[in-house]
Amino acid sequence: MFTKTSDGSFLDSNGKVLYFSTERFIKDICEGDCCSICGISRSETDFNDEHVLPKWILRKYDLYKQFITLPNESKFRYDQYVLPCCKQCNSLMGEKIEQPVRNLITQGFEAVIQHIEKEGHWLFFVWLSLIFLKTHLKGKNLRYHRDRRQEDYTLFDTYNWQELHHIHCVARSFYTECAIDSKVMGSFLAIPAKIGNNYQDFDYLDLHDSKTLLLRVSDVCFITVFNDSQNSLVAFKNFLERLSGEMSPLQLREVVAHLAFINLHLKERPEFFTMVNLYKQQQVMSAKCPIFVDLDGYESIDFGEILYFCCKEFLSACNDKDIEQIKEQVKQGKLTFLFDRYGNFNTNSLVPKN
Ligand SMILES: [Zn+2]
Image 1: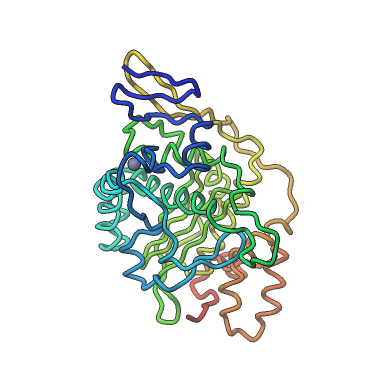
Image 2 (image 1 turned 90 degrees about the vertical axis):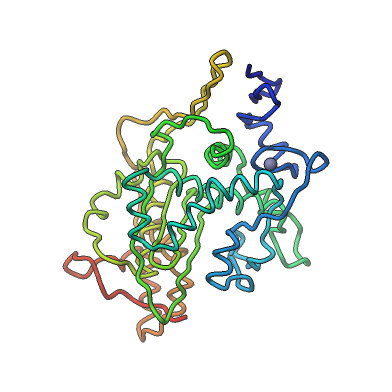
């Protein structure tokens, strides 16, 4: 039989944590150093390092010595970007998530789409939830100011852990095997990505405030919003219908900027919860969703700020003679890389150099 603990978590008869209360999640996972999947303490079992991005991606794209840009805009080497995880959870994650994802991605975009058409988005959504979660849990160990002369506080201080609680529930669903209502699925896109000789076949961007992530590996790019019950996609529908063909690195960054912007401006947000039936020993994750998708009033400059944040690294790598003017237009939200002046999909957008 399931039991409820004093902090509101639920355990099965073997003591496995089926549901972490927000309080326990913050105490054991965010502030503590327990296994981020099962919650076991370091003193009770063997742990090994889990790379935030899977090792096969680090190897394939030769990222070990490259840098990930953190929310404090400092850079951190991918090979040093690891999170403790117990051995048992690590191997279960490999079997249920990493291996199937790797098999599909290495076969290319068509294989990914065929899987999604047959099985839905869940495998990739859980995989991306794990990456997002690991990235942000890792933040607790990193100094916010990497310049040691400055006042020392960690990224941890700037995070709202409660918001990550929902993503944690989704990310560890391969372990808890709880039922998940379709309303829990966030906005999710698998987009064909252009491959070019003059830029890397890998890109990663996550936006903490909007709980949005972009991961591009070879010819497939995943973009997802974790906490919107697909409402951002509903608001993005008019754009989405006009996008056709393979998209360039900058175009993909523009798509993530749109979804992040919409998610931040949703007038009403879904509320996520887990229902646990102690006697039937069942748990279901679900969401209470708004009936209508509506955005708050906004100024176009806000979108420009997000777009510029997402694109600035690539814009700096473009050798277009008008690049300074282009940057200014991006900052003002007046420029799109997605469409030409006639509103058709732009098959020839700016190309950053490697
Ligand atoms: Zn574990």
